[in-house]
Image 1: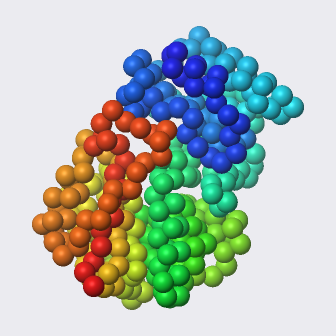
Image 2 (image 1 turned 90 degrees about the vertical axis):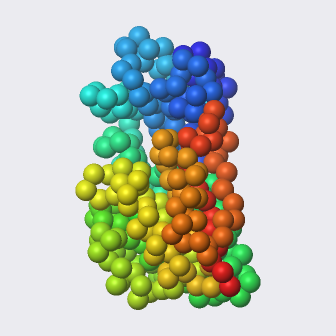
Length: 311
């Protein structure tokens, strides 16, 4: 646990939502099961193995000691989440969580909920992907694309949509089969004062192509599916179904952002299938992950790949 304790002792006062410690990357032997995230004003400590009371007490004391230095006049709020196989729990360890709770990233605000479920409403490893979208859309609009259109597939809570519209997109079509996630996505737009430009489809993507096609073709298509979600999407068989659709969804010269967070599937999984199923789309780059998410094997970490349609 020494690497995690060291990270706590050196952390700065977080303002934006961010990961503080990423043991999952395998760079800190003995800490592979630990992560620490900041969703100001709350910290979330996660273990992917069962944690003992002594371990939690030691880590809680370290957080309290550092918090006394960083914000002595503010209460320490922290949550423990265990995601061990067969032992899943979320526990408020100290303080409280604001209700409602919103966090910031690059000036945008997003609703989060830390005490219910395993996903909190904002995936921190996708921060650079959101920055790429913001920069790409702004550049496209500045180059003469005032009608810039975005398709956001597996939109979850629509963070990509918020940043795209802030960057000047004319329209973002958000599609996700979870009504709850789409509702939070609508709240995220309201939080940021965005009242026009976004549409929301709480439908299964594979049965909604008619509605999706009517708003296209698009200047940017974002594909950010779960790697495995029984009954809705399994990457090994369903990603190919999306790839086949991409050429018809994209304007000439438009881009696609393909995302995959499955340690067992490397870049070749996406690149080989794209070469086979959408060979006219050209690979442009892999978007770097946030530095804190460094991994001993880049192939295991989050993959965010950019492709471009021919002019």
